Image (cartoon, rainbow, N blue to C red; front, top):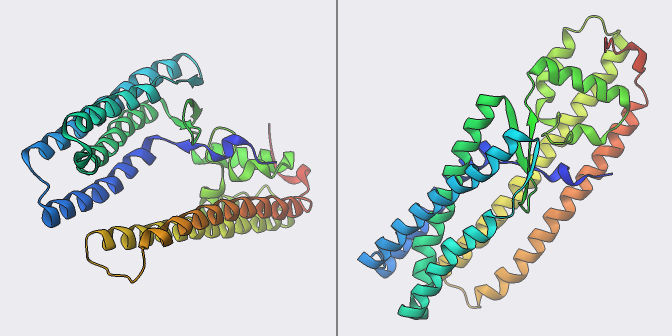
Length: 301
C-alpha cells in the first residue's frame, strides 16, 4: 500500500535547483514584459527589489523556525510559514491594487511574484542544504507543506545493507521510497556494483537480486520519462499561452480555451501515470521477491 511519505519532497537541493530553474523563468517573463510592453519603470524596479528581499526574508524565516525544531526532534509541524508568506506578499499586493488600480496587478505579479518565489527557494534551500551536510541528514516535507522531518543520510554501504534487510522483509513498498527517505531506486546502478563484490552471497541469490535491481532501474527510467513528459507538456502550454499573449504566436481561436482543459488533462494523466507506475512496480517486485531465499542474503544483523 502506498504511504503518504512516498510522496515526500527533499527540500534542500530540490529548492536550490528549483530556484535556478525559476531564475530562468523569472528572467524570461521580466525580459519579455520589459521589451514588449516597456514595463520596467522605476515603480516596477521597486516591485522587483521587494520580491527579492521579501523572498529571501521568507526563506530565512522558514529555516529559522523549522531547523531548531528538527534539532530537538526528528519531526516538526510548522504552520506559521504559510500565513507569514501570504501576509508578506498578499498585503503589498492589496496595497498596490488599492492605490494604483487593477492595471498594476499583472506587472506586480511579473516583477514581484517570480523573484519572490525564486529568492525564497534559494534562501531556504541554501540553509536547509547546509544543515543537511553538517548533520549528515536529509530534510523532507509533505508536498503540501506543514510537516517536516529529518532522516539519516547513510553512506552507500549502509544503504546497501538496508536494501538487503528490506529484501529479507519481503516488503516492496520500501523499495521506491523508504519511510522518510528517497529509497533505493536512485541507487540501483551503484547497488549492482556492490552486488558484484558480495562473494558471500551465493550465485543464484545474487542473480535474483540482480533481476530486482535491473527491474528497479527500468522503473526509475520510466518514472523519469513520465516526469520529463509532464514538464515538456507544461512548458509547451506556457509557450503557447504567453507566446500568444505577447504576439509571437497567432491562432484563430482563443488559446485560453485550449490551455485550460489541456492543463487539467495533463495533470490528471500525470497523477494516474504515477499511481499506475508505482502499483505496477510493487506487483513486479513482489513477484521477484518470492524467488529470494532470505537465509542466503549473508546478513549478519
